[in-house]
Length: 337
Image (cartoon, rainbow, N blue to C red; front, side, top):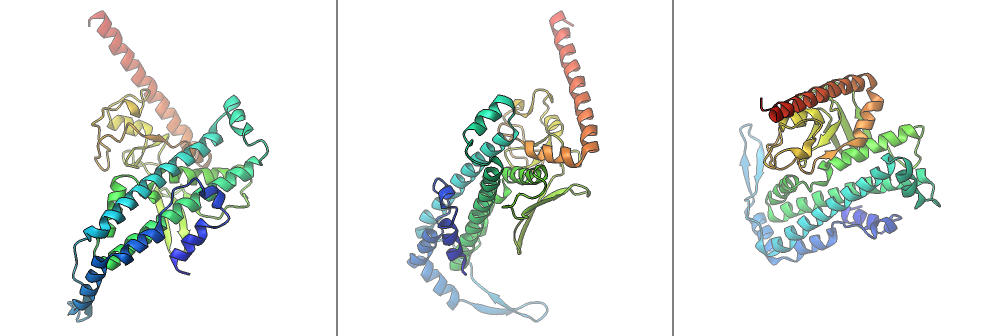
């Protein structure tokens, strides 16, 4: 079955109630834009006529295609629509994951009030259903974007579709690079452990390896597509502790990120100067919307207890040290020293 048919079947499947309020890639509509553009057809015909054969250094035949500029006629509809869809999907996905995780980690009266709305629904089944729907939602739309951009490059004999994917990463709307997907993966693993390892409706899409020198979380989308997310702090070169994802998506220990931004641990990342750069990609302004990876912290706390205790003790000692230095400096300032 072609992907277009698979995607249409997904949109009209059993989860149609879940998708009623969701944004999604208008795959068929974007495909029609490429098919209906006369300029695209002319470029494709010209490319076929211009095809020539060359020989590489080993004497093997190579097929060479002349590269063409993007088509301004369909690009105005194509890329503007796709960037809007990608932004809408990324925003919807992050808000839904945030809401789901808030329900999971809340305590006391807040937890009771949140769950009171679902008093007639089995809580375990509800959460399992929502996680499965969100994983399927983000992966299906991500694959749809990859497919349509690949189709664009094939029609235009260009690499503009590939470059557009790079642009999406730069604007932090590449769905499979979202830190919220890591949080959802950690939630999935924690949920399975808390419910005896058998959630019924889950498939084994997420797994993690925290014992190696390169700790990773793995997302298996299909037999041919597997993504790995590093859980290693780029500053201390150890498994992230009390982890935060900056606006650019890079993960760091809170203490490491605070040190890089020259702020106190007890003040937090949001106190960083607006022009502070990410230690990895050097992007500016990524501290203001940093995300605390609560579910990832819980996963590491449960899986690496001794390591967690050691790092917690070290961070607590550093926080006390910084706090003492701060108040000593304030006292000296007041006394005029």
